[in-house]
Amino acid sequence: MTSHRSRRALVGVASFSIVGLALAGCSSDSGGGGGGDADVEIEGDFSGETLSVAATWSGGEQANFEKVLAAFEEATGAKVEYTSFGDNGATYLQGQIEGGTPPSVAIIGQPALMQQLATDGHLAPLSEETLATVEENYSQDWVDLGTVDGDTYGVWFKAANKSTVWYNADIYDEAGASEPETWEEFLEQLQIVSDAGYAGIAVGADVGWPLTDWFENVYLRVAGGEKYDQLTNHEIPWTDDSVRDTLEVLAELFGSDVLLPGGDQLGFPESVSAVFGAEPEAGTVYEGDFVAGNIAELGTSTVGENALLYDFPSVDGSEPAVVGGGDVAVSFDDGEAADALMRFLASPEAAEVWIPSGGLTSPNQGVDTSIYPDDISRQIAESLTEAETFRFDMSDLTPSAFGGTPGQGFWQEMISFYQNPDDVEGAMERLEAAASDAY
Image 1 (cartoon, rainbow, N blue to C red):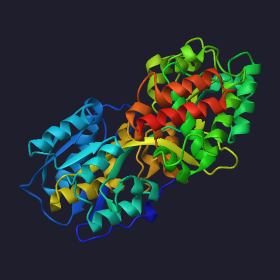
Image 2: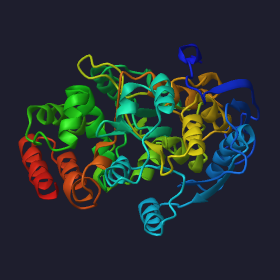
Image 3: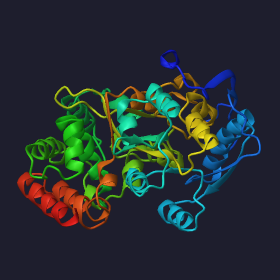
Image 4: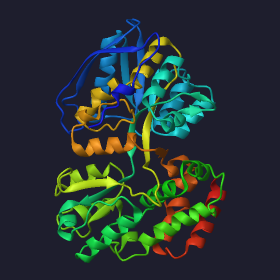
């Protein structure tokens, strides 16, 4: 319920003055129904100007984002045309650039794509006024994620929290388990659940990407943000002591008897159903905030009632940290109208149009979190914005041959380590060999 609104002071000649904010229809449905309407005054009339915006969102997400764009249109007189490029953002944008018709603003989910577009000279850096708005409303980690070679290009509009641990409250209550805060407490509670006749935790390890998320969360807490960046860029080897320390922490879990057997044959969706299905076998599953959607699809548990979550546990006294992802707005247009749209997207009010309808977690610290449609989405958002450290999913930042290909690299070596957690040294050597080949 915390509001950070008092910390905000939007500045600049073309800054935004909010004269009213009516937020209605707080449905958890992420479809187009019931959103917010913002009355926004922006100095400068952009009537007669047309901006084009492209993003991945379609369906209900598109409908909700179009409400955000409609608030900007109403405030400025500009017309905004939206295009969904689905999962083909890089291909779509390259084609538009080659044809001389890039969108005014695009919202993309890959920091590497933003970096490449900026390096190639296709993007307009944020104006001083817009950068001031970003710096006022976002933590430095998010500002840094939008910066390339000293210039800031990105406004992170949507985020994903991949540091959430989900548990079946009915099973925890039956077993007498409670929400842990530290890694030691985490293992203890999983053992309590296991002693009650359930597996403590289900891990979907048949493909590998959930295991890379396990590694990234533990590594961020063991090694810290600076080492995380170095390992991501392969500036330190995977034989570094920080990798060893992380694998040894994971080995405590992967080598224990609290795991649901057969995890290396279990897909991620099946790991969720093992906890929240009609006949649950385990009490806990780790993965990002998108687990809520998997639970809803099962239809046998209810998020916020018996399907609850806690933050990924602290390791050796580490401060709150989040690994996640997000969607960043970038501008191909250095005109005043496009800059005004970027500044609007950096304001809390833009996110507050969408948030009550569900389906948006904002990294903007200025957002009034009381408007999230339920306690779980509010908890996810607050753990994200209040984290001491945020880092983007490591595997998404590495070459795809290492971090994003089934059967090889990071994915495969984490499966091998899950199957044989005693072989820490061998895992390190194989990871380093795979990284050396890919970078």
